[in-house]
Amino acid sequence: MKNEPGGIELKSKLLLIGGGGHCKSVLDCVLSLDKYSDIGIIDSEIGTKIMDIPVIGSDDDLPNLFKSGWSDAIVTVGSVGNTRVRHKLYEMLKAIGFNMPVIVDSTAIVADKVEIGEGTFIGKGAIVNSETSIGCCTIINSGSIVEHECNIGAFCHISTGATLCGQVKVGDDAHVGAGTVVRQCITIGSNTLIGCGSVVVENVPDKVKAYGNPCKVVE
Image (cartoon, rainbow, N blue to C red):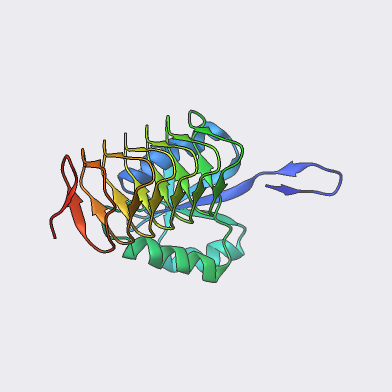
């Protein structure tokens, strides 16, 4: 938000980049926050609506939309094990000059001493506890628990209902599947995918796929 002379607070205009399922989760949160004067979606189906919010342009329209006053944007393309599209969109938005806010659902619980990178989304009922750090453009999805002193990298996805116990480290671009439990003090490598429902009791290296109870590397 910006302030006019005299202290009047002006609401910003927000673009959601990508109109799929993850967009709907973020959009529901944004609508409940009542922080933005205008909301628009960037996708290929220009002229349609998603949850009554219009698709107002494609990626090619972003520079002109920025010049016309759309100052804020967040990447709403989801990811499961492949973050290349999210990286590309993030870098595009940075190059144009967009502000990328942190979006936290009103039902989430985030402790005071938490560091959160730009463009990160924290969904419904998620809990992020004290002295945790989260990198940019990460998804902390609905009902997930990130306990004290965790360190989560950039472009990660902590899926629905996953639990990271205290002091867990998750490298950049990692995916922790739905319902997974990660024991305290475990490290999950960068670009690694943990399958849903896993129980992680040992460190997992970079660039692998792993799942199971106990979680084992499969490729």
